Length: 52
Image (cartoon, rainbow, N blue to C red; front, side):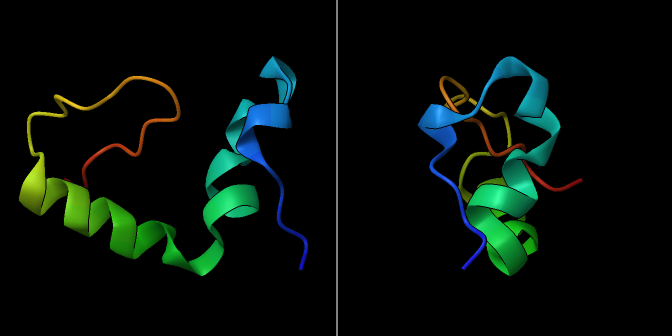
């Protein structure tokens, strides 16, 4: 599938998290985050930033 477990990614791979872990769902996840957590309160660990 080309996916990856984000817990096993190195710091050098941080830029790959959206495409590697979430694939095409990344855009929708950001929209949901903007609706339910616009202030990004739940931002620890592997954060999905809210869409702007």
